[in-house]
Image (cartoon, rainbow, N blue to C red; front, side, top):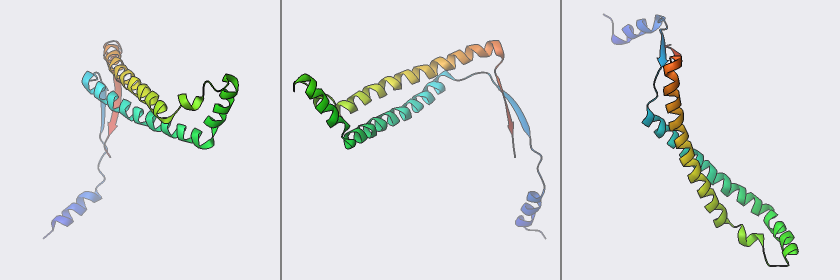
Length: 134
């Protein structure tokens, strides 16, 4: 009498043949492309915000803004200072504006590229992709 474990051991000892499937990508769903490009744009927006914050903190910690402020004050006779213009709130507001613009542009470009691919498939026949199972 054989157990289930014995039957599974016999099955696992056999070497299964790898199956290969060749498929052609002939259509990219428009809404799926928009959703995916939006998610990628959100990731890029987060990276943009963090990189602006870290860059500002490094520049502030090295004292570069204070040196630049002294340089500007010497030219403008104390009327204009860089530290009043460039601060953490201003830098982060600029980063948010850049991130929002980037979010919109990347989302629209994802939709445009999906549309262009769907039009190009009518001429080229699509992208041939091969899959194998191990």
